[in-house]
Amino acid sequence: MTLQTHPLVNPATGQELDSSPALAGLDETDEAIQRAHDAFPAWRDVAPGERARLLRAFAAVVDEHVEELAQLEVLNAGHTIGNARWEAGNVRDCLNYYSAAPERLFGRQVPVPGGTDLTFREPLGVVGIIVPWNFPMPIAAWGFAPALAAGNTVVLKPAELTPLTAIRIGELARLAGIPEGVLTVVPGRGSVVGQRFVTHPLVRKVCFTGSTTVGKQVMAGCAEQVKRVTLELGGKSANIVFADTDVAAAAASAPYAVFDNAGQDCCARSRILVERSAYDEFVGRLETAVKALRVTDPSDEQSEMGPLVSSGQRDRVQGYLDGASIAFTGSAPDGPGWWLPPTVVESADTGEAIWREEVFGPVVAVRAFDEEEEAVALANDSDYGLSGSIFTSDLGRALRVSRRVEAGNLSVNSHSSVRYWTPFGGYKQSGLGRELGPDAPDAFTEEKNVFIAH
Image (cartoon, rainbow, N blue to C red):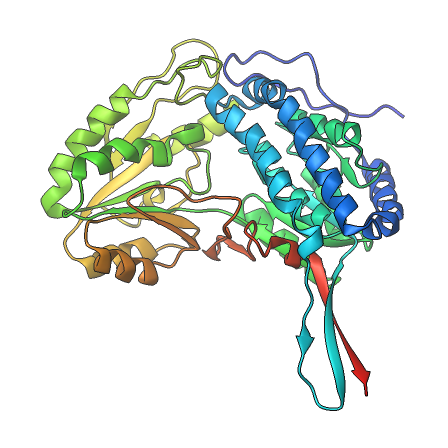
């Protein structure tokens, strides 16, 4: 049988890459799931300290290959080399962090009359992880590191556009001593491989990161088997800037909150709400910052923004700009590749698609507000609730607004959203469940209760 391939393209040049991995069909997917199922009992029974040692060994091998993985991501996904190195390092860091979990999957002794009551954390079995194209390495690790730590086996589907780093990480796992079948990378189409993760009875949990539309389909499919699911979906996050803040600092940092990874980030602060008395100063300083953003070949050590991942994605984002009220743009290379300049739009109507929908490109919409209540209402006027930022020098206001904005991850006077040691996930249609943080391994377990009569 001849397997299909999906041609891979360097987003910075538009040129096809030499390597295009074969795409798994239904039979290959079923075989991978069966291997993971067969490997599960032995991996589940590995002593906690030994499983921890293997995860640390995996982290060490990844660390030895950070530069190789980063260069692959620049080539395949168009990420800047600085970002790509951080992303490869994040895989290493997640593995190291969750290597502590096997020896700390504690149960509880619950006071009861007539006996002793104990709880145990037991792994689910095979976990299917579906990874998007925007952050191929970190999002994979956010799933497989805690899942493996909890004693599960994993089948992982990378996006068709960006499979190269996932394939290499799978090879590094075997090199580190992770047993065969414990972590299997299955390149393929979502409609084949991803859908089979949803429907196959041996897959006991699916972790999906991607669009809200597809996430709803995954959730509905998992419901057929009452299969566990974690969803990390879209976002339309707000960056709220109050006049009492350091306006210069807020404006200087704003481009990095939305144009990182060319805006292809579900946490992008793609709506900026500025208190009216500071609006003109903020927008003026924002223009200076945007025009200074270095949008160059992502392999350039000085690059701060690269291309979009594909011609289709570039065309989709461009469609939002047609007819929009563009305030100003930054620069972008004129040559081949899927480039768009960072773009700032002034939005007068909250019903505009560019204000309400996830553009997933280097575009940010800005508008003024008058009162704190209005800022909160505007921020919450969205189907999404993933992340956001609040800039203010008033601690009381920072806490008050943080409690009232409907989002799972907020930053005050900064734009950080994701740390592997803190929980991550969204409100409303931004997702279901939480990833990362100290409790993530628990999400890959069943809690068993045992009562022993006296």
